[in-house]
Length: 274
Image 1 (tube, rainbow, N blue to C red):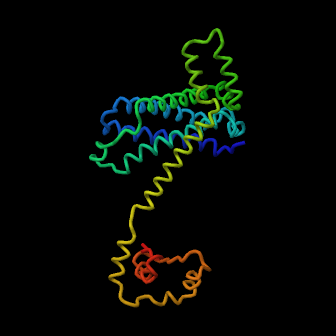
Image 2 (cartoon, rainbow, N blue to C red):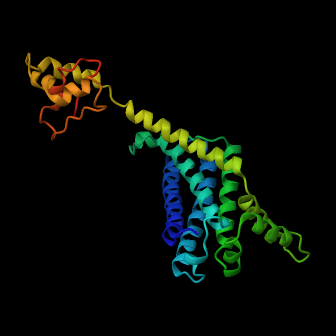
Image 3 (cartoon, rainbow, N blue to C red):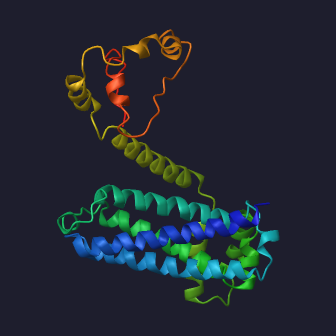
């Protein structure tokens, strides 16, 4: 069983992502050129998803079905939340990567739309599937069904789909739900890999944002000869240099002189401290 905090927390987390996505899409509507229809189409689908998620969050908070007891991590609704979380995280990462953290008008007007029309249509279709699934969960019968495994849900919905009394609109809605809840492990893994790739790329950009060598040389020029030679005779330094300690950690408040002190270390090992 999933614990009740993680159940509500999962829905709240997905709702938060949907809100962030609508906000950044509004920026693209103001700034992007050449793909305005695509942006507005994706924004419409994202806002619909956000509204349903807000209602689902409120529904779970009321706990009318005692969800804290009957919401296992293997349930279709829980897994759908997880997959939706992955997709929204991936979309946000792509869009934020193009925004590059700048909020200036000049940057906004230079925004680039990262998807072709066909890709955007596939993404919008996936979001509509999530929206319809979460909307289905807002009824007692629908939520009780989505608490079951994906194979049970798929079997039940397929029977409904072939009912003689089903309307065209209900058939479309069930088709959207089936496209979402049917196990698609490869698709989910692809999204996970895409998210991880973007996280890794952003982390590497952050690591390489500054070149410490220029600051190191600047501090070295200002350093008086033989300043801080005592550190090379310190027991901890000697143990680190000999390989007995894996890390040499210089701790102190900004301006205490850490960088100046460490400038005497052989340059291949030196990094300025802030």
